[in-house]
Length: 75
Image (tube, one colour):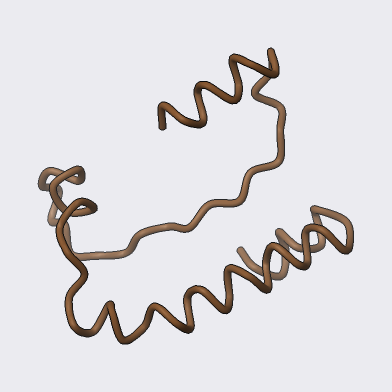
């Protein structure tokens, strides 16, 4: 988050479009930092190519058309 905070500070506004990759896991309300910093499981590693492809598709949609249309397609 500090990278995003730095960008917002440099731009002087938080009113900027953002693309985010979410996480989904069985954190059980535990320490989320520990969860996101642990190595990928074998199953997560197997899913990475599809995740990266979908993220690239989302970026292309944002760059080629209205942001709102891309949001509706990929959210």
